[in-house]
Length: 402
Image (cartoon, rainbow, N blue to C red):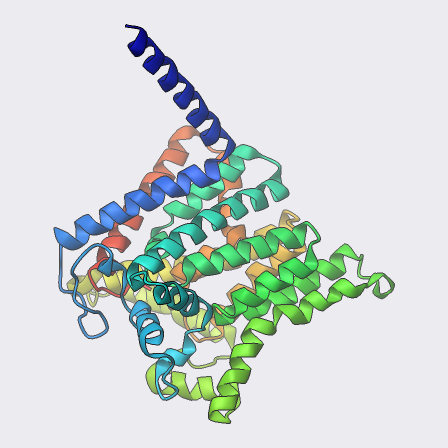
């Protein structure tokens, strides 16, 4: 009896410590539960609900882990195994993510396991950063928790556990923005540089940092100090990769990338007239809904394109509403530049995953959800979760969903 009593006391203490940890670190517990749930779900949908999908750009499906290596993941895998092929399209994939995986693989860790581990750690870091960033902006713990939930429930959030850069990029981006708001400009610039070396769109951080830095100085040139170096530092990641490409090809990066996209992705050409693109995408969606073209492949033709469309609108919306609600100028500029950069490609392709790094979207959604009735919040999360499950299933089975 005494032994059982001691055991009961120990269990009570453990439960108390666990409850305290959950309350203190919701941004760690929530994504941790999410990661475990998503990996289990992916294993199930790959093993039990296997469908052929596209086999041209995807390796054979063997386990739930292999279900992570699809589309862009195949290119990252090739970079890790063989390095960059300068005559191939894999040069459009920036080096930080594959380099990290390569270094882990060199010490004996399986490539896929290494990627899953890195993405899991990166997501926990990103989640904590987003929680603190939201607290910095709203000062409301409930809104911060709702932000994490809305972010992880978004249908394209499954990319966080795929062989993609999403988790690493958002970890760098969210902490760069958080440190920027805390006036740690140089640290923000260093993380921005790493983000720029992870994905090309990271180059916009130099402008974001400049906007916040000058705003903090009340736009007075007399108050500028040495920390302005954070702006050029933010360009170092993208700049280093571009210099390496130039040294290998003797072709200016923008010319080189233009030729690569023209050869492999002609629909991604530069389009300066953003209004033409917005009009084309809007009328295209209307035309698709009113036709029967999507009936044979309704998911990829309607649901996926609709998701792209809504994602871009949400990014643009976050810039406008963020400005109206007087969010920090860095967040407004970040949303606005992301929306502009994405639409300059001439379409909204893959915007459903690019939105994951545009944190103002989810902060604003959380602020809205905080004011709604419980049934509205429940409905929102149920619909998001259904979309997340559907997109995870399709992606893991080789269908292109962004």
